[in-house]
Length: 323
Image (tube, rainbow, N blue to C red; front, side):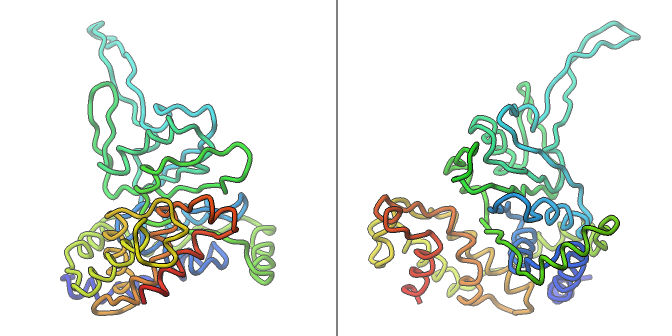
């Protein structure tokens, strides 16, 4: 299959993936759409919601559907960095009696790593993922080890107002392409959830892709050019979030989005367009993923918090102003 055929197959592939995931996960269509966009863009993803909303099940189901290796780390207050990256152990060769260090890989050596409740562990341990997320490698015992390809971190986060949570450092939040809120299901969806989960075991998700297929799609989308209109529009949106911006909504903002937001807006729009059968991305495709890119990169000031203004409200206002 050449590049043109592969590109034309993306929209049907998206539909097949939505159907496969729907065999296991009820509802959450918008969450799944954004998750697939991050997956094919080779971007890490953060899911925010209270416990019990099937965030873990969703990530595991996607790993099954795209045929990649799945790893999971349950973040707890006593988790150590080596529990994630791995550790070097001293071993003795029974034949020669010589001792040598051997690296035991941690759960980070997976294609799709679920960092479950990432904000329930202190910042020191959270930071263990920084190198892995940025460079796709880890350093232990003075040696650097490459992670398998593809490598993505899909993390779940509890609302920071909950007891026993630690705010994620801004540098780590910026490594995530998207931040996606996961809300409660509707009454009809919850009734269907109860029917499926109270009789027998959940079936596995049908496999739609293999790991090599995912890598080919990611590489293809990275090669596609982005038209100048989309680049300019992405930069205008990111710039509007920064202090000193002329946008009215910027009055609520203490800290805005950096250049990585502009990059992810352009990359995400390109992937969103391809997955929805559009030949060329447009500003509308940028708007479709803008909130997911910006909500964890915009920090509101005390006045906004006192007035009860939310980040999503500010982002929506900014998008209306930018037009």
